[in-house]
Length: 496
RNA sequence: GGUGACGUGGCCGAGUGGCUAGGCUCAGCUCUGCAAAAGCUGCUACAGCGGUUCGAAUCCGCUCGUCACCUCCA
Image (cartoon, rainbow, N blue to C red; front, side):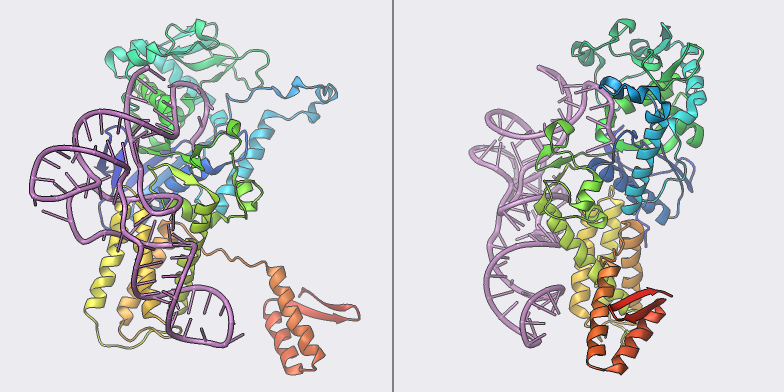
């Protein structure tokens, strides 16, 4: 069914292009991962849900995908925690946070958040700190090729020199002259020959706590370099898809391309550069300084002033998928409410469908209905193939839902629908919702609360000496490996 | 300042020359012990002005407005 050729918007060409893998049936995909210095937020959810769907889509279409998503754990971490008055903490090494401890903590929480969102883990998740050697190698190539220079233990990429034979700015549409006329004065610019130059390797100042030896002294790699080096290691000089947020397009991805061209790879690194758009909160950019920053934990718990109730991971996932990935997406309590209801409606339809699986009616073959169903299902796949238009695909799913709800009444399928047609819907609906969009039924119930309900019925039956009912409840719970215990103080249960 | 994007009904959000997505909300109806769920019906929009066209939300121009990137950022 998933036979429509995928078209994907390539930032490099600014056009939708038909996706043609470099080495079919294999597909290499690299997505810029998080910098693990704080909790994951709504923006992370959008980016990784977007590329999760692309990953799932490609796998579903029969490709063998190697998905690489890094963890950035070097460079950004400075030891600014001991500005305060805690002098004792400085004495005991164990009282201070090790940089790797910070990294591990937020890596763990990131993984937990991603799992809750039903985002498949990447096939390789390399850490920047584990690939210092590869990064140094790449710097040496760029130096050898004459497109970088060393100053005081730091190595900078020579943008003007590179721009002579290449076009710096080709991805983001920048023109080097425009960039030059608008540069700001920043620290450490004195070492650079041009303000556009960027660091490949930075000499570590004494307060810098993450440092590695290199041919140029102790330091740490520039933050654009890890992605070029690690993607090359695992996917090759040129691979299929590079993804990330729109905010990474410049300068991060621009620099990646420059590095790959300037190294011995001599490629644009990836054939298709794909960018998801940003999110806003009540129409405003999300930012710590704006006071509207919201982490995934806060959304899931409802512990944030913007939301009036907890919103589940699947509600968030559904909400994200209801917009096209290249549009900005606005978060508000009202919009999330709508998303929540829509998600519930979809899941109710899925449950209805599952229950009806064997309860079809025997009918003569239908003509028009089969054709209609075929059309509805096809439109969902076609939408996904058209630059991953999940919003349109979901609207198609809801058309199927309305059809289902109208035709099927529990527990019998409408006699107008044949078994073949029913199975066709069931199979494709499942594939689309569960496998490609990656939604799942969240069992909403709190098991303890449900057990309390059962216990209340048990107590009531006991009080009424309805022992048939009492035995039935005990037997049912026993199947769940639970046993009820009567005591003078009341009724309780335990694991059996 | 430079570059780019956008402005769709009460809200969110697809669509990009004719066939007027979808979800949520609201009103009514069917169903119903109550309540839901579900179905049906209604509210039928494309910032403003002008142009191209048989025909424009969709193309072009202008005006107004919003946003993003240019600095760490998904």
